[in-house]
Image 1 (cartoon, rainbow, N blue to C red):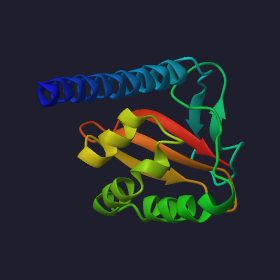
Image 2 (cartoon, rainbow, N blue to C red):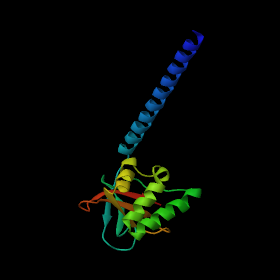
Image 3 (cartoon, rainbow, N blue to C red):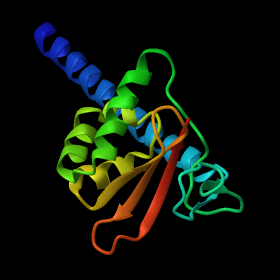
Length: 153
């Protein structure tokens, strides 16, 4: 009888722990989505010239360009490596870089956009350099339409 009672208590404890874990995960995703949709987006422009802020960049009003963000400290070399891969233009290498750095990129980009790059639904192009503001331009793989822009300082 004691063994049966102990088994029931352990089973209930295990089930309740699993439920809390699932609820926490769903809550985190909801919070992340709400945060992403509440930012002030700007419009990306690119006149083809080399000077950031004059010939290309993000400006008001609302559009497809996220607020500026950037890595600090030890994460700078990681972002520099990803950006160099993006500038290389090989989408297969870019997908591989996004896959291996997904947990890092999620701090700076929407999870759905990262997933689109990894799946090949979106291509990523780069603008800028490691010494200036850098931009990740996400374009639709099917029609090359600009979807989202991520500016990094």
